[in-house]
Amino acid sequence: MTCAPHPAEFEPIQREASATGVRCVVGAVLINPLGEVFLQRRAAHVRLFPGCWDIVGGHVERGETLCAALAREIAEETGWRLLRVGGLVDVFDWTGGDGGLRREIDVLATVEGDLTRPAIEQDKFDEARWLDGDALRRLAAESPGSGMVELALRALAMRPV
Image (cartoon, rainbow, N blue to C red; front, side, top):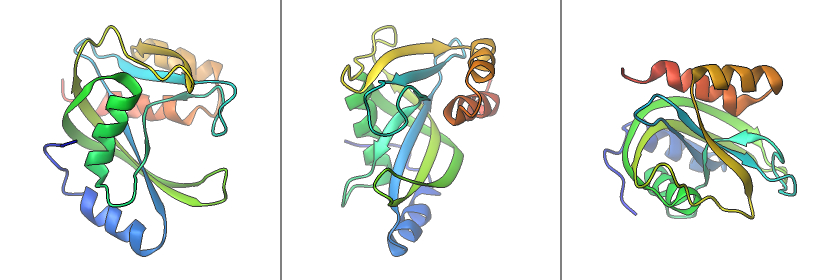
């Protein structure tokens, strides 16, 4: 998978994480031409964050760049193709279910494909939606501590108009 343009921030983030033994995770905040953000709800049976709303993304495999991992995860989780990586939304660390430290790098991204028909991974997600700012705020109010919904709201405010 290819990725262009490759954000300049990616290399030092990945290099530092690798040097300290932290596994990288990438996430894409996808915003459609109507200004809606794509979120998926994790299935109740998954090990990490069951029932939570999430952006598209996942772990970076050994030898993979952050950008290549982002393109792969987008294709796996939606069937869409990554066109462009935009601004950095957030970088934060969290501990996985295995006790291992993760460094998550979330960015704005543009994709192509039939945005009305995501090919979501039915074994991992039970719902997917495009949500505007009002719907995101309602969802955040209904689900306190919904970090990815709050991240999506921040990203929506960052997007170029």
